Image (cartoon, rainbow, N blue to C red; front, top):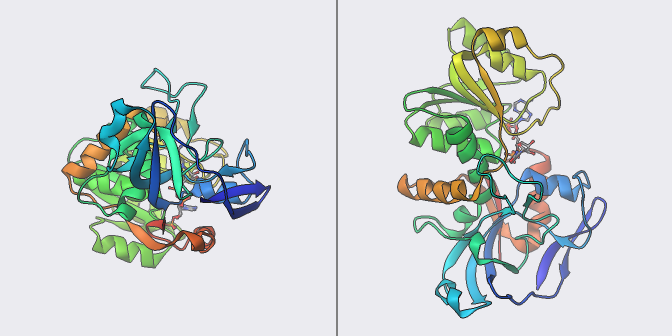
Length: 329
Ligand SMILES: NC(=O)c1ccc[n+]([C@@H]2O[C@H](COP(=O)([O-])OP(=O)(O)OC[C@H]3O[C@@H](n4cnc5c(N)ncnc54)[C@H](OP(=O)(O)O)[C@@H]3O)[C@@H](O)[C@H]2O)c1
């Protein structure tokens, strides 16, 4: 089968590799679609911790179960599934254990014609989604679901800000918060993306390359919940923009560490600043159910054949996309 593998630092290639037959407790899935995450870009550029060469990349995918390792699981055969990207979350639903990994490094991932995974990693594809849309869900959907509902404790009618809407997790956070009845505003560095988001129901739009925080404060706009992955110096702006007793949930730090935290405003205004990463297996199933219940469709930027996956990684490097980059098999 063909698989996208890391072959050396900063070097990736589509290669011919052996298929893995399913052992007891496992399923072999013929991939129909896979999606890229920022993580795949970092791995492709050799800038991810603990890279192991000859590993198949990819954390997100949808496919058809072709075979299972034991008869107890034969009901899965012929089903179209999405794959839970958690590997060994552990026993504590609040926090992943020390053996935790994300599918696609160092375990073989979804950017291949076949993947073999334990059957407990499978979830049935929501019926209203295409295979490409379903492939867009797992990692971004799981991270957003935990950030918005568990760590963010979102309540109906709250005011939410999602930063950097070009990011896959940001878009899922937007969809989840809107579906839960919140008022949702977004930031982006691209006016095109902001205008598209206005059309998709964003309440306020802000270009973070301008004095957006001053504009919001001048209009007395503050938020009950901010979902952020940018970090850096911007965090103090977000603290200013948070309502008393509000929450800021961050799951990334794209612009690096925050030089000096405005701790005075943080404690005086009773603000909760909390980190979040991926989500537990129950949250994964809850996320799939929520998507189905609310008939949500993840944003898809573009779909191309697997053979052109390098083009998709180039597009991610240039931060051009609004929606997930999908490859099909
Ligand atoms: N902890 C976890 O479980 C977890 C899971 C997934 C991702 N992450 C991390 O979260 C971050 C986002 O990942 P992703 O895959 O969702 O998206 P992504 O493809 O990395 O996109 C990030 C977006 O951030 C925005 N951005 C960049 N610089 C910004 C700035 N100075 N101010 C505001 N926004 C800025 C851009 O939005 P515009 O294009 O709109 O300008 C960009 O599209 C990454 O750092 C990733 O490593 C963490």
